[in-house]
Image (cartoon, rainbow, N blue to C red):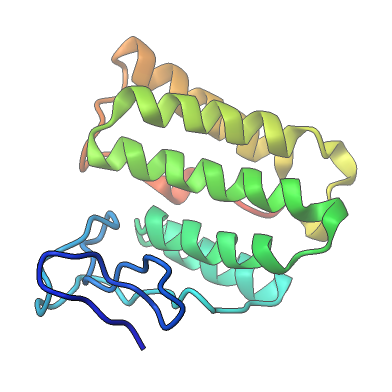
Length: 167
């Protein structure tokens, strides 16, 4: 249960901030009581690796990088220590795409490169068939395109090129 006094942030039952506002397709909060453009991923959501990769890819293919980030973050939170940085890097890459979609060119490029560096460390033996090399190429390419002006941040950013698994 989430509570909120007028003018204050939403809080869960232990008093932790927890935004319950509906979201637009890029994850931006909309006014309370409105109808969101996407289903929220609950803060306590749990996904198996298979479910997380499949759901995140489906969301990326449909243009919902922020929601894909939330799914990847849920897997990150429950993954064993040796894999946590992989999932963290995947989530950072997806949220980097989100920043590009929202028009934050500089923040997007930084997150995309940070995520690429993090996933690339896993090399060709990355677990679960994750295509870390392909993700790193996608993320750095988009960051470079944003920096050079070849890509314009905003609605035209397509996250479907981020392929999570090797073909």
